[in-house]
Amino acid sequence: MWAADARTVDVQTDGDDGAYERATLKALDDGVFEGSIRGAKAGDRYAYFLDGQGPFPDPASRFQPEGPHGASEIVDPHAFSWSDLGWRGVGLDDLLLYELHVGTFTPEGTFASAAERLAYLRDLGVTAVELMPVAEFPGERSWGYDPAALFAPAHAYGNPDALRAFVDTAHHLGLGVVLDVVYNHFGPAGAYAPVFSRRFLTDRHRSLWGDGINLDGEGSRHTRDFFIENALMWLHEYHLDGLRLDATHALADDGPRHFLAELTARVRGSVDGRTVLLMAEDDRNLARLVLPESAGGMGLDAVWADDFHHHLRRLLAGDHEGYFQDFSGTVRDIATTVRQGWFYTGQHSRHRRERRGSDPSALAPRQSVICLQNHDQIGNRAMGDRLTDVVDLAAYRAASALLLCAPATPLLFMGQEWAARTPFRYFTDHEPALGEAVTEGRRREFAAFAAFAVPEARARIPDPQARATFVSSRLNWREQRHEPHAGILRLYKSLIALRRVLPALRDARRDGFAVRAIDDATIALRRDAQDGEVLLLVVRLSGGGACVVPPAFAEAAPRWSVVLTTEEARFASDPSPPRLRSSEPLRIDFARPSAIILVPA
Image (cartoon, rainbow, N blue to C red; front, side, top):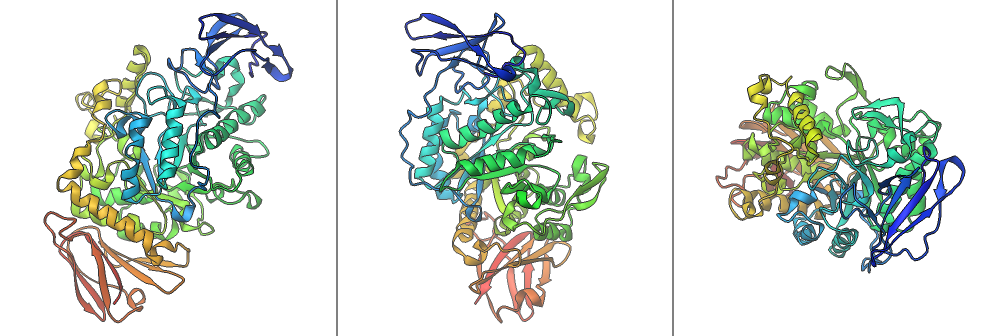
């Protein structure tokens, strides 16, 4: 135990016979204490006392059955009987992510109930599940970005073996599992690591959450090891296939070797014979995050690239406030974003009032993770509304084809594959005083937006603390049985199947595709496989009209054959598919927003 601010550290264990035992740990160097407790076994509860004060739970507890403030439970991480010993992970070339929140993915909101839906995700065609954070948090409901006990799966979702069973089932079905982890701050309540040592935090760096994590000051060796060992625990004790590192732009580190570079190297050195993917959520558009450390980078595999979402949201829904003011939503800029992986490569950002981004040309297209929706882009809206609540389904189907045919790595958010009508709202379960502050802060955030400029409008924003806010965010699985949801689901399955089997869509070389704005509403995307196979996607994102595909995109064949349009009767309740008018030049008539996939006849 690293307890740099304590003179004495005692540990108290509570066996199944109800007898308490208390032992004093031996002080070593640099605030470290250690000892051996004879007779302690899996299932026993234990807690710490610092200078006689306590009890405190273990900051590295493997399970908190009574929540973050209760006693810790001893867990044997090797007792689970795994059946996935031949599993080797999911490579970036095959990655199609499905992000879900365990608590709202199913009515029961547990690891076990989520595992029962994994066969559905396999049949949908995604290749990996991305779990929003599952580390122990205060209360019974949370997004997970207020972590308390970082090593303990949230008791609200199940015990550690329930999470292991989820992963084991996923691997049995051919699905990878990626976990979202938070290393840039501790939650506002229930996090005991800073109680054991104030040097977990530093006032040399500040963040949205107050003092920054101490990655480069006195005691930072222990802090860095704490988070790196957490990453290794998830990957080894739970057989996870990768980590999504939350808000890496908030990991301030002025030391000689950046924390991310060390974490990546430690992870790479710990795995043998299987693929583990490390991805960053980072809004700076920095190529160095994924460049190898030998080239001055951090060595991560991929980075979330939100510019694709922001441009499309501006075009389809008209959002223009906040960070959307930096995005034109023009088809030309969308094409540029698809071509580059992200849009901002050093231009001035009006919203940030500084330059943003770097040149992504050295990156492979798959190293950019793009989406139409994710938990942030839905849940951080005042009402938690989805894209399909504000745009017509024809445009949504067309944008979905662009997402799933682009050379980047696509991410889906739970329910988007059937245009779910349930919102995904921001919810918490803090103690009353903190909860009230969270509610007021949430509403205050939206005061700068025109729709919530007056207090009466802000009062309509759902209360994060209300259980109803959480319940309303649960997926309604019955929706997908009915139109138009069933048609959207059939479209997603069809597009994902094409992405999996067509060489032109599987080949994601940077020189293996071309994208261009044909006019103010239409994009052409050509994909070329090394074996010579060609695929042409033409997407109309607004209105109707005719377009002529540039000769350079259509020269592969004198005649083209339609593979799929997003306006077929199996996808649309009121189909109005685009029509090929001529082959030389290739001319397409669109009655409304839609997409058409063509291959040489």
